[in-house]
Amino acid sequence: MIPLAALETVIDASGAAPAIEARLPAGVRGRQLSARTLLAGMMLALADGRPAHLTRVHQALTGLPEDDRVRLGVTADWDSGTHLLTYRQTEYTFGLVAGALARDKPDGLPSAALAGLCADLLEASVPQELKDSGSSLAVDWSDLETFSRPPPRGTRDCADPEASWGHRKNNLLHDNDELFFGYYLSVAVTVPDEAGPAVPELARRMTLSSCRHDPVPAFTPVLTAMPGQGIPLGDVLADSGYSHRIPRNWALPLRLAGAQLVQDLHPHDRGPKGTHEGAILANGNLYCPCTPQVLLELGPLAPGADKGQAADHDRKTRETARYKLGRHASDDADGYCRVTCPAVTGKVRCPLRPASMTLDRGRPEILQPPEQPQACCTRQAITVPPDVNAKTRQKHDYPSAAWRRSYARRTAAERGFATVKDPAAGATARGWCRLTGLAPLTLFTATLLIVRNQRILAAWNARQEENARRAAKGLPPKTRRRRRKTLTAHTAAAPP
Image (tube, rainbow, N blue to C red; front, side, top):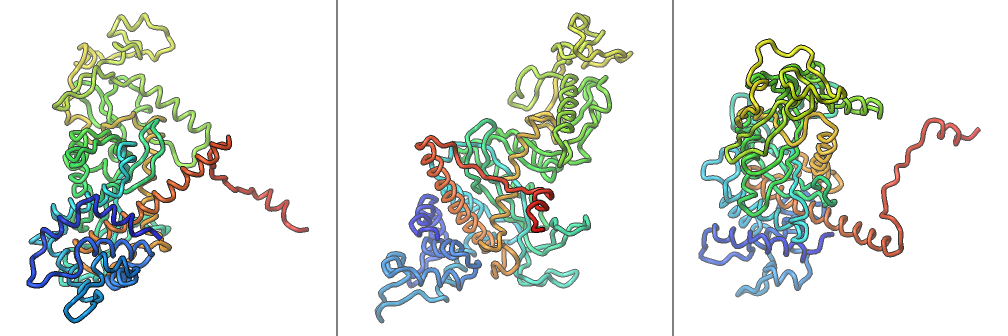
């Protein structure tokens, strides 16, 4: 059970309660239930593994010790005597909060006030000592069903008109996606920086949007707003569902905000995709026009590949990098950069660059240079505008070993959704929240992620204390032991 004091600390640090109260209408008689107490009750209910029902919120508040009930206003002195908070008061206050944070004309996207509230609450759940420990984020989206039944075909007449039909992956044998009725939940989880210290995988940003909207452009403004809030963006890790989007909806705004993209490429975006000044565009880089086709079409390492296959794949990616045009410097303020022929930088031997022919023969040699060389072969350097490779350009060469090691951190996003959807800790399946509408679902989802962050922090702190205790005794940190038995071992252990 998460202590009430820890949850109150998050609420107070976020400043969410005063911001909500400022948006609520002033009644003739003061409300017994404040926004601060309501948020605490929502977190208490979810921390206890209860579903996101207002009846559970009311039970969590009324089940507190007497001192806490009086302090939070759950028990109040009325003219008629001591009054205990009722369920109708809980329902009324939550309705006011949800209505104040919703859009005037609901369209399936959160309002600016709601998005800001979620960002403040999630940021407050990250301890101060961990805020600057890493700037890398792993992002992903998942499904979140609404409790409403879908509308009849061709209509929107249902209890949740903001919801819509969406697609999600399933574990069935066929490859078809499964339909669901509800929303897309997008989450950004903190991951360690490259060569940086380990950090707890905390949910730092989230958004909820109707399935009639693309989840990627709905989440992009949430991430690009972080530098303006004093939180620099480092590596942003995403799968091909993000990299395949139109560049102005994902890649370009993130780069403008200072992020370094580390992403998988969609099969349609891999391999040669045109030329620029004679150089071949492939996998986010520019390559010599005489690069072997087999190297340009190299794909990512297959899952389950053995060490020999991995070594051979890495050898090919290193060979491909020899043909890549080298950068003069990083991008300028407008996104332009300058690149140079690989023969000028001494990576290959080419007759069109006589100085390169004096290099040792351990480098690849261009045996048949172009009969009519273009700018990349004749100029000292060429200028690359930001719209070239705008979708596929990223931090590491794709699909090199450096990219593979860096991209492996993205599994933190998958683990984040796994903990949220765990049936033992309040799965977000249909019926988890019986309120309909984007604002109520967003409020409960944000508080659920805060509760998850508290659990992750508790486990992290316990592990750090254990490691410190072992270090004081001269023991190495405790690691997980993989208990794997072969068929031979099981056969030998079987009774005769």
